[in-house]
Length: 121
Image (cartoon, rainbow, N blue to C red; front, side, top):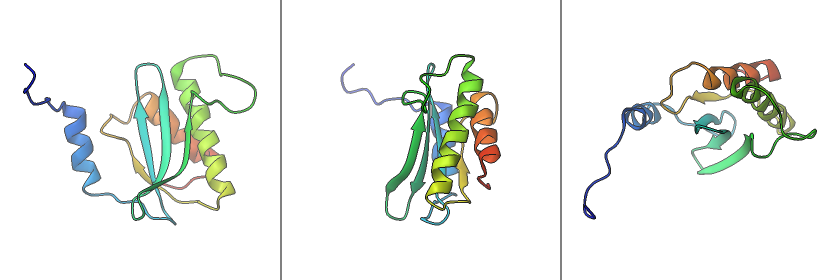
């Protein structure tokens, strides 16, 4: 069916609903989480100017090579790395956008890693 509309799943509906309520600024950017089955991607986004300020993922790991281990552990390390990069740019506070995912597993680990790294939510 070439003209069929794409069905929006429940995660995307939740994400749209959440995004209507939160906005990131340059001083307090939006901490966005996207996870696929294999990877996790974190970004700090300034919604006013529409630019990504900082990004981190397990595809471009910090020095020391690709992290081995459970996805949850890797997500926590990537969260810490993003917090470290944010503090270098003098960003201390963020607005958390879980992307429609439940606050559980890798999303929770990334958030906790960022908090341990020094970001305030």
